[in-house]
Length: 331
Image 1: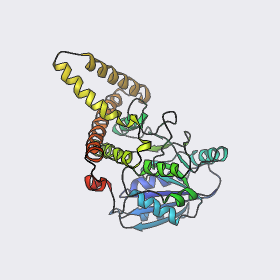
Image 2: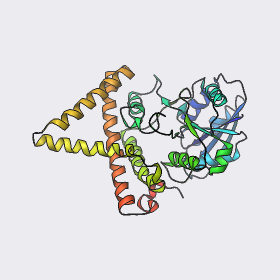
Image 3: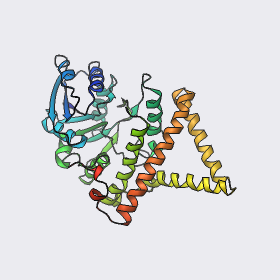
Image 4: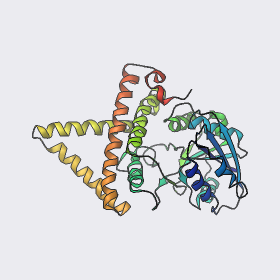
């Protein structure tokens, strides 16, 4: 099979250079192409891409801003390969990645796969803390598709592969963002395509966001999930309610502690102590352990509030998603 790497870019010339540099050291022996889709950036990366044209089979396309999902679709429509691998522009790809994907697909072919993300030692402490919060089994990382043991795996488009056949049958990504990843997975299931996790196909995901941007991101994730539950009720899971239940439980714990009942506050204290210890063991840093606790609090609060608001508006008051949350939809 011929891999086409689809990489949408929006105002990230430095990040795309690091990604392309990592492609130069792949141990993969077969030809592959990289398709860069500039999504209406005010800081274009064309000059960066030009530096790699003699080293990679690479193409560059500039289009008006229409969101990451539409940009990925654009890239897949112009790509030459028969299997597309999609990366976010702030990823760094380890040398074994393409070889691992080829081996996994050869042993057990699937029309759509996803891989995990990890943090490099060179990442900032905040990036490492956010990475822990987004990927750990003890946080919402345990219910966001990080393991096939929990449910059918839903690949995430920062590190995702899809066959040309599956792309053409499904039409690719929808206009919602975030939420376009699980939306595509569900539509593929409805078309009898399979999705799976390839654990060895991990990437280093920089997540170049500060605390404010991280809150906005997870808040949007929370808003998107009830919309997906509304569109595809048979795929709604009780686990999707956990962050909101966690948030409401914390509020109740504080209230009952004020009333001199300390059972709930004790349970939450034990949880955060365990999270703190696990973060230290994983990152080998006391500071990152503390930051990971803070990142998890932001994550649960942002996602929980977003989910609760969306659940009330979409599921109870039956508002149309595009009207209730226009910021989640590209025109």
